[in-house]
Length: 427
Image (cartoon, rainbow, N blue to C red; front, side, top):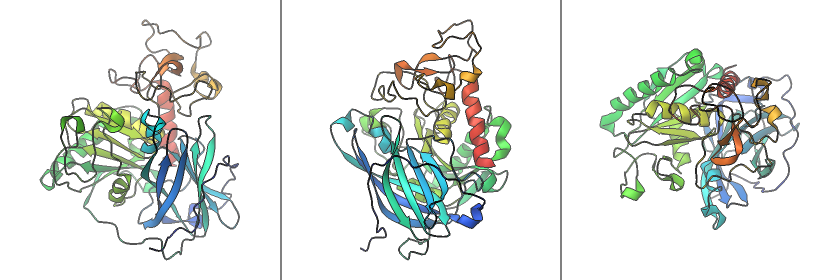
């Protein structure tokens, strides 16, 4: 088969300086549809390479047409799009991947693996250079793939997507001025599609019952894609339960029972392409506690667990802006954050560059680190124990929905970051 891709370059150059898009508008640079790059991630704990397998056109672009160049630098990966003629940076976004999380496990220290991935950008009107970067252990972006794309290339796949019925759950405006969420079903049979719609409405009602989403409901769109599975539920490998489902979600992802994810990200994106979207969230038809989410990748949660609403809200914050987990536990991830590198997550710090985090929200007499004082449960501080580590990583609040599900509020630091991200995608 003839390759679409004529240029596959893996290299290790530092991220180039950002040039702004100038006075040209979205419509001058892009068409209102998506260019999807299917890629393969290959590597282990120490190294990762990325290769392009094919490119395809998708019918919808749901992202902002105003904020084209990302200024947050969230994520362990980054995609940039440059005009081929001038070198001007015309689009960029950060993201994370499940393969990137696997690289942080003990298993990755002893073997290499490959996993499929997807990168989506607005469809360019003219030739572009697309570059993919991965953060190294020092937090520096290193270039891993560089691809020239000519929009008229006849080998960009333009076959129609597999169409499924869709349902508008909550609409408030045009996709370019809204945070667009698509809800996908996993483990719902054809006879259970009405149940999926009910669960979507429950997700939406619960989501907008929490601040600051409640106050910004008018800046969100939520749509659902109605696609059935052969069987109900999800895989539970350690219990010998295997289900024939559309997206192949499974508990015990990366060895953790409650981690409910799939490696079939291409299948997830195929299904999501039925509507314009910024973020994909999968509702899994099971009562067993579980879920997961990865920044700008996809999120998931079980439908029937008693804590389902809080799980959805917690996981969406991982998906939406990459907020870090604020708890500590023994396990595969407790060396995720090197002590000499400041985390990119808005709610975590190693105190290396704390001035760039929430120092402005501290009272003058608050020490850093801050001891937990039960008499001051709502004091913004610098509390040790976060990012899965008991020592060396700090969180802003004694408790928050990013730490436990005991309460019903986000701390002021997380709230501020969420609001900023809402405006980034809706303006």
